[in-house]
Length: 212
Image (tube, rainbow, N blue to C red; front, top):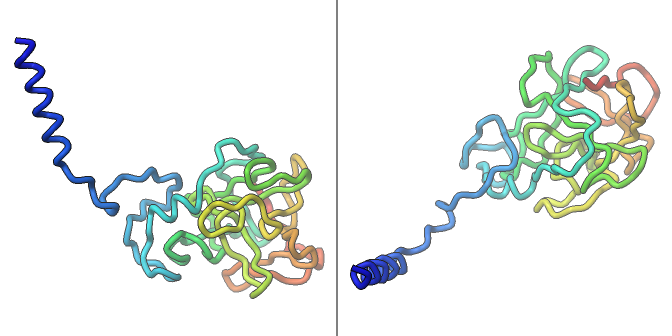
């Protein structure tokens, strides 16, 4: 009886050894961000042409060690409209997504986390603004004066630490504030024509946003 069991196990092992590894495209990779149910190969407007879930998950990893002052909350402009993103407006990694404004409707693409300490923010009195949907960070690209959502830490592959282009001033308990990136303290974000753009800080009401 024991001899039969041993033979059976040896046969199973030999059979398993002949099974080829699954090709890379069929392996299962954990999805760490939730981009509205989008699937691999979904068309996107930016580089790559189609969404690559593996690359997006690597680029936009949720920081579970972070300190969140607010989680999954809307950010509204002075006119009552919500900031939001459309993940398909970015590239294949869900990066370089333009930030827009729309009438608030409670969907996940208009929700953000305010993080004050973690892997991508190590400065007291600062915050990063993270999309609850993609886990990318609100970012100011001073080279072309664009506001977008990009991989937190500022590196496309998702291996960045922290970057001044994603850090904004924040005081504990603060709910109304300007969004002025540390890499250009003279610039403040402002809604214009359905988009979030950068303008010269003036202290006017249209440059003040409400969190939550």
